[in-house]
Length: 172
Image (tube, rainbow, N blue to C red; front, side, top):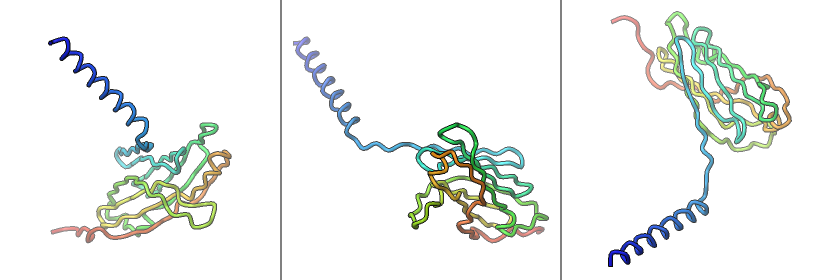
């Protein structure tokens, strides 16, 4: 009786493993894209995907407001792209107020508007705390740059800006 019970358990365990393996093979799979963000003193760094194979790295200098991005070629594994913007100018920040920045990336797959160059899949959000304003940027991207190992230097695309709260007030 114990042997029959043990055999029955083994059969159910084997069937469960087989069903799990079959579901794992047949279940629709989606590639996971991880991003990272970090900061140190007056500098922030983040990553975001431009397309399914190419990732950009974004740098924000809090002192100058310079936002820069670059990407590694998936073909030759060298940096081949350079993009830039100035957050202080775009958000009309008063540098005398000692700006305080935060930066993150998100993913947004924009609709194709007919041209070869479109915004990359990563959106860079830069928030400035003293003004209460945020800007969204994208990189002008064409997959042909990456697979053809063609270098590109271009300004980043300022998608939009908005206020997320009233500006901070100095003093009591």
